[in-house]
Image 1 (cartoon, rainbow, N blue to C red):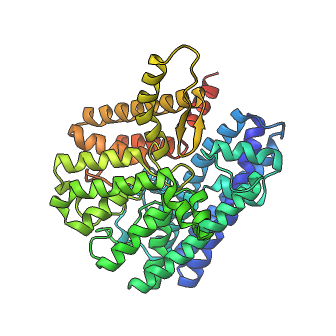
Image 2 (image 1 turned 60 degrees about the vertical axis):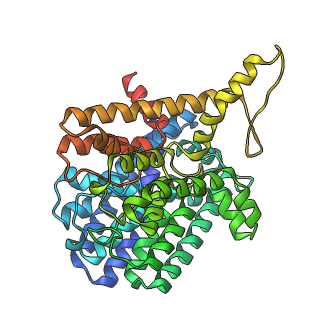
Length: 452
């Protein structure tokens, strides 16, 4: 635990420097309140990080310690990230923490009225999702993590794909691709008709599949061209960085051969088909894309959807985007594994003893233990959703609405069908946001370590 806390300290010191970007924006906006609030957050982050780093010894880092680092770091970063909301927006601690957790986990559920926030605070709010999309731990790997620690921290944040031979180079490549997509996305939004300010905010929240908006109505009042650009950015955000690498190498065939890309596009079309009668074509495409990419931007009032429409969106939110992307949910590859595993298992049962039947998806052969882990993870994911849903039902909400809220929070989506949450409901939703962002295992490791 001591080694874990030492690295948490290093990450908090690094996080202090990450906050200089919104601080610079606040200086440009000449927003004194936000400047002071972000300055306070920077001081708290750096000083607390310095204390943790110096107080605890650095020893050999285990996988368990890496999971603990990821869990504690995300919680402390969310707590420090709440400071601007407390100091400027005058939110209570729980509300400020909720907004911060929702931002850094790229969920997008909100307790504020965007029109009441200054431009500097809105920029910070959107920036939290952009940072959360890559992950603070991944950014730390890029600039400061020793080689022998990087791979463990990379895994602890729920990542496995390697774009380069070394993890540090892979993390650097991811950040480079993410920045390029952000730049091109902002340019596309500006050309489509958005202001410079809205282009910056919406590219942050769309490419990170976060979903914070600068208006209470989310994306309702925008043009068809602007909606189509955002749909494209959301889909790009939900593709893996390995696919982005192919995209920037102009390997278009390679992009569309990817099983997760093909499945996602097919599911968007199927979802839009079922939503079309209630929303119209563009809105149906937007909501289907927003749901499966786990972005959470909306062009309709979710509360006006039928139960069937809500169930379609719940299914898409649970499936989520590609593995190795900024999106949430169980991930498309796990969804495909679940669908194919039954057929594979039946083949094994009826085949002669000793027959080897490989389990393949997109050219990759899965080992038996990988299949077992995937099925176990999906079971655990649904168990947590059921538990959260039952709590919301017990608190007086309809079953489908309760399921919608929990699936949205745990999938880091941000669409909501309930107006206003009690403090208990906010705590439950924050738990599901963090569990979903870290893909369950790190939180379980942290809880079991405290129990011991």
